Length: 247
Image (cartoon, rainbow, N blue to C red; front, side, top):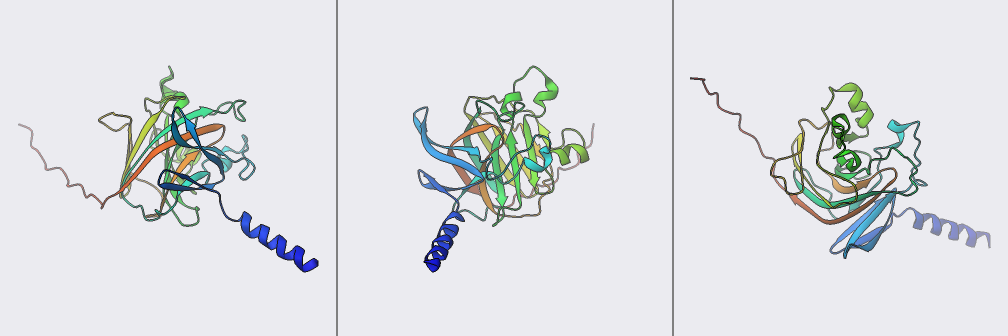
């Protein structure tokens, strides 16, 4: 009887170590510190995820330590993304009731995620402030960070204002097409059908050169995702501009 209990306990423990996986179309996602499901939303099948506060608790008094963590849905089968384009349609809502009233609908992507999810790059949005009538708030609508050593508060303290944040014409409760073009140490983000980028990361801070792709939400956010497209490309080397003499 004792042996049976031990075997049963080991079996249950082994099962619980595996993350839940969800399939949307031809893509499968592994959930890491998020809860999720495939649902029909506005007439289409989408991936719905929310941060799992039981798996990864949040503390409003310890923002730097408890946000910008590995809470995301990882695309299965693609672990060697280095340079190229990531495009996804996403839609964010604030949970009701909200566990964190200042929440801004945090939603975005992780890329170059290493094998054990302990290092990656990220660009995400705060749609709640994208069109607010306050320019200083709008300037925080887009955020880059590099996990684990360069999260948002660290970047604000150690780099000039606006180095890793910016504005974008986004809002809650609407579909946003986000496209990120990654090239070496730089990344450029485009929103919807705009011809020009809304945000540029001049120098990313992570040391991971290649890895996986993840779809991200943070505290108090319900995120819906569809139409994820990833295109890998070779590193594009920009030629330096020729010197032009003024006449």
